[in-house]
Structures are given as C-alpha cells and as structure tokens.
Image (cartoon, rainbow, N blue to C red; front, side, top):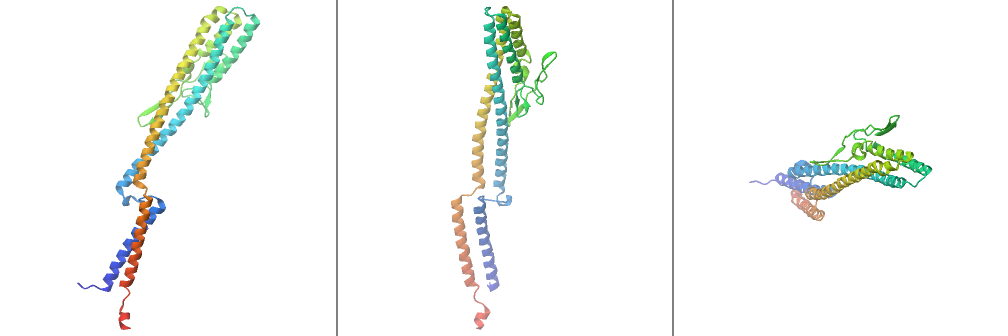
Length: 294
C-alpha cells in the first residue's frame, strides 16, 4: 500500500482534532464542575440526574409546607395558651366571688373584670395569622366571631386546612372555632360567670358557672395537646425529609459533579498529548517537494 503525504496529513489532522476535542471536554468540565452537559454525553446519567432533581424539588415543596404548617400551629398554640390564661383567671375570680363575704360593689367590680376577659376571649377567637383568621375553618377571610344584637355568633365553619407533607401524608394545620372553643359555648360560660357575679348568685358561681369554666379549661388543654402532637409529627417529618434531601444531593453530586483533582490530572495529560502530537505532526509534515528541489 502506497503511503502518500496527503494520507499522512489527513491522519495527523484527525488525530489532532480528536486530541483537541478531549482537551476541550476536560476544559469544559473544569469550568463548569459538571461531568456532562448534554444528554447525549451520558443518557443513563441524565436520567438519574432528572430523577434525583425531581425528588429534591418535591422534598423542598414538602418542607415549605411543613414550615407553613408550623407557623400556623404555633400561632394557634399561642392563641390557645392566651385563652387558657384568661380562663384560669376567670376561674379564680369565680371562686373568689362565691365565698359569700363580698359586698355588692366588689362583685360588680369583679364582674367588670370578667367582662373584659370575655372581650379578650372574643379577640382570641378572631386571631389572625398572615392575614387569615385561624379559627374560621375555611372562612379565613373574615372574623369567625361576631357580636351583634342577638349576642355572640360563630360564623366560621368546620373546614380543615390540609397540607401535603410527603407523597402519601397530609396534615391538618388548623383548629376551627367549634373544636377549639365549642363554637360559642366557651364565651357563654364566661357570660354566665359575669351574670352570676352581677346578680350576687353564689350558688351559680360555685356550681354551674364554675363547671362551665372548668369544662372550657379542659377543652383548651385537650386542644393544646392535639396541637402539640401535630407539631411533633411535623418535626419528625421535617427531619426525615432533611436526611433524605442530604442523601439525594450526595447521589446527585456523585453522578454529575467531577472529581476536581482527577480531571485536572486528565487535563494536563491531554494537554501534554496534544502538544506532543503537534510537535510530531510538524516534523512529519515538514518535508516537501520544494525541499528536495532546493
């Protein structure tokens, strides 16, 4: 087989282009930190990267939902604690007013204090979080408790606000007013204490009125326990998602990120090979007919 200068030149050119392509690949990897940039370079790796990123994005959405639910539950817990403090003070006033040794003026003064706590409890029932009324069920755009000519009314509903915290789990992040305060029963119990104090009815203060307040305290304690259980569930779920997120990002890095030290070494080897190929090509292709004629 006859070897011509043209054949040598073509072969050298192909080899130089291949060497330059490998050098360019290593340079691109070093500049971006990624092992591949197009699906055609690694179809299997591309598929794995897409799945990992999809899982990471879903986990981030779940963790955002958990953060939202935590804020809502913390606001609910604070409101219930506020209401519990008020009820415990009303209970003390109820017992104090039932001892039978107080003058009418003193009872009226206590009744006025209880009335202020009543108004405070109505405000607790209308607590807002991020511009939404937390005890209104689905009716979060307007105050769930409204006091008109007929007395206090609950105009919310029993709607549950659900948030997805994993692919197969949801959590209820709210308590409606019917669950938290028995609708208007808690407010009616406080009103009963005020009426008994105004009327000087020691029997009611030590009996039915006090019983209503005790039931209200038990209800709020039960609701606080329920809120605490939900918060614990969110905490556990958030930890699980965080650990899963960390593992997914590690797997993603193993697939798409380069080993810097290894790629630098490969780059230097490719650069050396390319320079050597250039030097060899210049020597092989240097002789020509002009050289022989001269």
